[in-house]
Length: 376
Image (cartoon, rainbow, N blue to C red; front, top):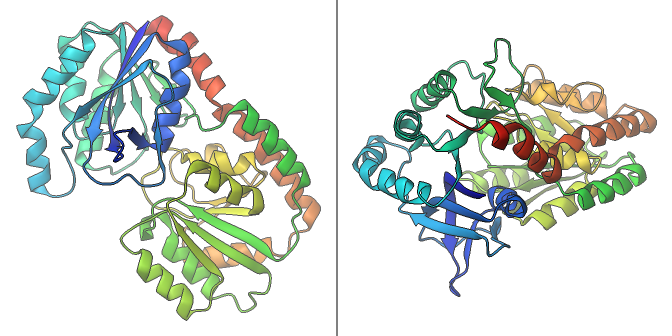
């Protein structure tokens, strides 16, 4: 069986000609290659140098088909999407002729016209993946439109979380991010981890206020006694990186800004850290970093956005409510008073939650719940 994946995933070319793309998506496709004769990935090729989080394809069965990047912020960038509609549809049609089934990854700028096009004019088997917040109350108009269209068509849609009145063709699906080998290592790390002060905290993601970076800095700045805080690791990049770094220096916080790190380097920090912080108000589906951290006994401190609290509760982590710097500060103070055995029990329960986020589980569900029932 041959698969086409249509996405807006960022790809780049190394000086030696090697094509690499955004790590989490490429990892997923590399694992899916075990179950298909060929995979054609139609996605955007950017001219910039790739960030360290990018990965290469590992199977010759995967063929990357580049598209010129379209979309972005501002009216001008949106109009470019309209101008490129014929070109994108032409590329999609060529790829569909080569395969048996497709996956369209949404929400994305090109999804606004590809969802209706595929729904109305293609009888090819396929399914849609919606990676955003399926239950977002006031999403951007493009996201809202794509979600509405996906509810109205009949192909399968994989979504984050379980929701009231969820349509029967919309299937709750955990995004894969762990191998079985990493599960074994994670159990060893979780069992051996000591929850004794000073504690190590980490944040992984885009460095921006909506993700909670400013809340983290403000919360730790207001702690009167910081001797129980060893290090706060910030992994990722963003426009305010230097602003955040300067604040931490001025407030004498034990913060380390790593920028982008590759997957293995991020996992090494999870192994040493006691807590992952994601006090986000951004539109989240279910951030993979939460499952990855939980796999290594790194307790999540999160907000109640989208489906996050369907996996994280007081039994296996901590929920900041309301999501503010003040509430986060009070929660950290409470955490510092919790006995080690209680935290170890939470870490053990957190590890068990991560079992649903393996690539093996994802592949099995694709084969049994999607491919057998993927007709339009």
